[in-house]
Length: 511
Figure 1: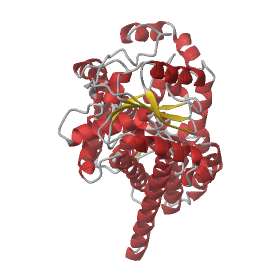
Figure 2: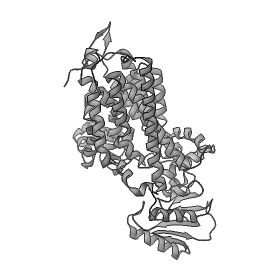
Figure 3: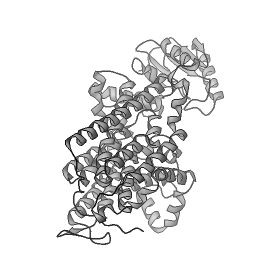
Figure 4: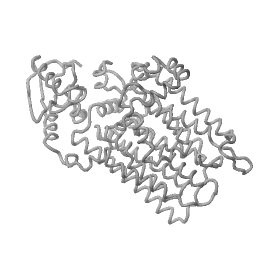
């Protein structure tokens, strides 16, 4: 292992240079943030227009934030009805994410899912600022731009954008800000960012726990003398690390086991660790007494290994040289120790965006350590390793969600999208409608949307789709069977076009 020396206290600031240089850097950084936000928003809005988004999960968040904007609890009828919690179910009983209330005022400007997609684009892009600041202190401005670009074009961000909207939008900027502000000696500001993270999701305490473990590895420095990593942790960071770790664990338990139940949820709904035990105490005891079983779960199925490799390989394994990577470990382990919910360990979806900003920061820190930046105290050109990270990120782009940007159907509606638009237009304003997953986002701003699934909910309007497999069905044949059942129950076809079928029946609105 490379020998590394790190100083206690705030990271040393790189000289800012002339005022003109500072202004140019700020303008370039602002341009990078704006360009990233524009790319993210354009991609997400084109997906919405092309009917590539879904009621699960875009309509869930849309209904919840709309409820917030009306000063109600975040009720998502589509989630509550489909999952058996009832039409008045508040999503705080699914995931404890009260931070979503911050988006409610935006719905007073534009009431619709487009607002969420644009807000997510801006939030993701804002993480660039603390990533640039952190890297610039260690490796200089050129490396900082490379690190910021690598984050902006990273596959976890692309995959999150390709899965509509989620609360993860808040995590990259807040997690990067927490690390960067603590590194800059602004411990109070770091604590504020950490507190905000706890409002994002019930398991964000694990991110704080990991950050606490990282702080417990920081080296000591007394009377200006630098000490090696094997020496004692500075007292201030030891106390802060212990506080972060304890607060993170306690809040994760309280949010997962108490608050979710208080809002009408099932605190065992997401328990996915049956291979280790039926609950936390049994799983923890099993892990301590049978550690080989833990190792076995981490590699079964092999897709877990693939995903874990993918999160560090484009970063040229540099996070492995930095203890800052400990920040991401508990959150990653939460997913990889699961024995069900296969989406958790896939490279697709939004889950890897929870840790990508921290890992980019760890890559910058690892590069600085391996190059001996802190040991020499001199300006060492640090752009090369981060330029390599940026190049690897660009090489990965065609294999993940950004490849869809080359699909003409994304930016120009094809016949399927036009048929979906026609089907949505058939449903009157204010109606209760059971809509196929891909059509719900087009209706949610003007109708009350339920998910078209295996059970009839008695809605007067149904928009079905039999052109190809649609969530939550297991086959197209099952979708066609459901249409036949609805017609047998008295629904009549109002429109049929390119696989989309609009059905209507004159019945009282059940809700």
